[in-house]
Length: 140
Image (cartoon, rainbow, N blue to C red; front, top):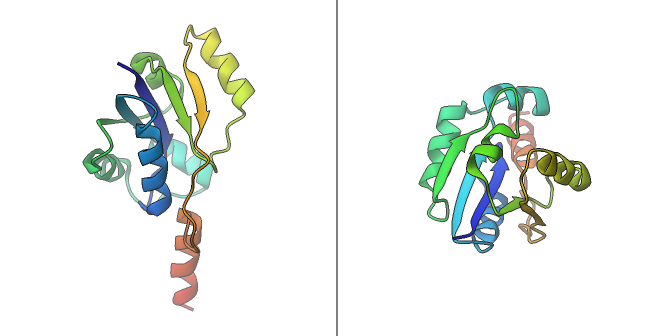
């Protein structure tokens, strides 16, 4: 059985997320999604909109997701170590240094293949940031 892991914030689920997770699911037999913790979201994006438990609940309900778990607040690699995936799917817009990521995984005894999912949503509102900008601008 090939286990695939995908990660993300998933603040506002949109078609870009759905396409990413559908493509990630095609890479193996099981898709486990690591949902970023509120603490991590605050550090990375500067704000959070939807609490982690709600984001986890929504991602868990998606039909292509076999299991969703919360990330670790201190060590983003800890859940990956526990899950021992065969493949880690990276979104087209996720800012990961693939060489650094591969090196860290090897240092932790993991031999997961990194796959960049290039397919993405073709439309105006393709990211959470754009959706939030649209909402803010519509109020002005």
